Image (cartoon, rainbow, N blue to C red; front, side, top):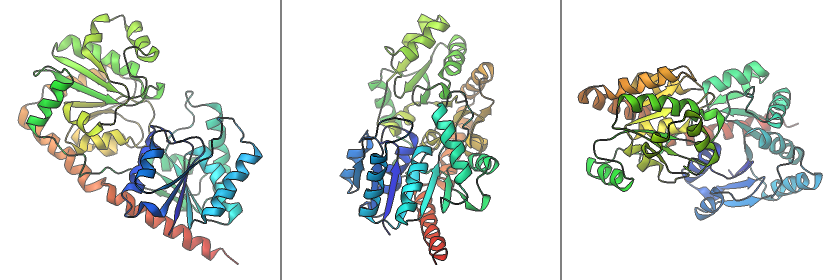
Length: 385
């Protein structure tokens, strides 16, 4: 079958990354077409390099797209004649669903949020989420949620339970593997990390939902208790010259922390970074299924996480789970992790990777999406007169 994917953009977001990994590992990327409502972003060229047909509609970020732009979307779908359309995230779900149905192609929605009520979500995002809930019974053939908690919230908001399918995000366990001690030491030296440093890590864009404020406040307490501790940050706007990060550090009034925080900005060497850190921290106040957790655990790095989305289910007994915005709890969990005996820590690392290998490999995600697309096609055929 030919699958056409519609996504709002091809930037550095989680959904964009999952889409790329899904297509890359599908067995035949040329059977996939990707349409971005905006531009090429980061993944446009990467998708083309593996043989994917990519189209960018160059829509603006206006609340309501012009009729001409929407008709262009309809025309592109009709021209590509896909077997099924898979949409990614709210705006693409709405526009792609309507366009696909006008063409007569079954559509599967993709929801990668777990909470649309947060004050930090845009008003237009919340409005689209409410509208999608109202039409979810008849427009999409199926709705894919990447998390169990997200699926429960979808049903609560009005999505029919029999049309919701949970497909957890997956990670390539052949790429995300534990590094040898020699390679790990080399990578740490390249980053300027002292040999005896205890390195915390956080990968995620600058966004209030990631709650870097709580993270850095907790790190300040850990830094006071352990002078060898450092914090690695990577992601959009996470540089020392960014207003976002410098604003948090200025508010804390701890200029001494600057030299103990590695703020690297956007990075593509995620597997290497996950290998150089000792403990990964997820400090978010809202998530659905954080891919960074399974990436960290896949290389054998234990995690301290907030109880948001499916984080607790992912980590299980391999890490530490605490409520969001708990500065003291976050700091205490990190110090407890550092205090573990080497053998206990080694076993924890092994359990973390084993859990990912058994539950969250990329092959399982690819097969689950293929099953959803076949099911959508069958159910659409049954509804034909």
